[in-house]
Image (cartoon, rainbow, N blue to C red; front, side, top):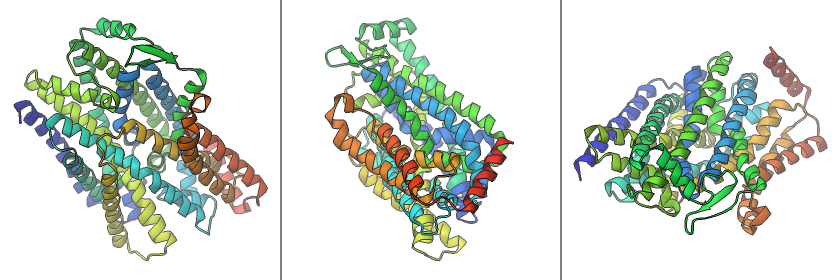
Length: 513
């Protein structure tokens, strides 16, 4: 192993040691499942903002998004980022405060399935069961994509076998998550967002310099057909461009709808200590998301120019997601400072992955141990027993995710986009109607979840392959179908009880003050 490789490993090792230390520290502050899964509702505004967005971005920010921009140009990456930026802002401004207040009114639930069950006074536990199952279905492959990103990182840089690298990375994530729970995950997410930001800045400054300057980067983009256009998609094989039309743009913007149904983001809204500070959180979160995604896209453009001038290898297919790793490897060959900076870049990639994987593990774990085992199946667990069950469930989900991540050729972007659609369609419409429409009932909510989840699979595997006008991101049609089912079924079935209406109106009045 070279000196630069050893230096980068030392930097990464110190970073990972810090993450595990945080997990150990917060393990002493867990008294029950409420502390473990929601941190006792003690999050401050900055931690709330940055942990919500860091847990959302995943390895998609430093690998998936630059990879798409590197390969196909601005359009697909930019419209996706615009949709996400809009979704981020509206999620904070419409959902955050109301969900925080409603969750208190609804007997302080500690999981998203608990909130839906309490909101609709669903004694049959149907809502609890279905929502918990969907969380597990979509979070396991989502977590697997994070483990896969870690495996790609280490195997590419250090010639470590992919499976070995992936398992070691997963072990570290599981260690601090299982030990420290929600508070550890949120605190590490704050640190990881800082590391991500440093990584983005370093890559841009170094990449532009190696590529020959900002003008050279733009000149390269202009030479590639449709590369810098918002209405064309670049074909790297023969340097041609195809139309990126209105329907495709609308479909891509639909990524923003996913935010309304992301359990790991919504839980941050429920966990903030003071809902009057949500305005601060919203501003911090929105600004960071917009800037970080814009920079990530620019990195893809820079990387393409670096390949053109021979600084890094030309990448094709899913290998384009490794562009930031290639840039880090090049930086490590300069000097000692370069090695340290390269280590920070790689730690940034790990930060993206870990900040999402830890939250996903907790959300999936809570659905199994808290909702399915304890509440649906009736297992009697003490406070200590609940903590043990929670930690064992985190470990079990991680093992399943590692099996799914065994294929090194899987695309991070593809896996994340499908899981994102699943959560957005299953929980997004139900969340919005539960917070803003007092006539919605448990039957409508259940119908919305099931129809949204089914439509994601139907559109992805049966309709979208038809191509043409049918080539629409599955989140959009599934979100629409779920919304229709919620409205129709709610109106065709019994209206909510007076107690449910009263709670809704009380929350509505509080939100207006």
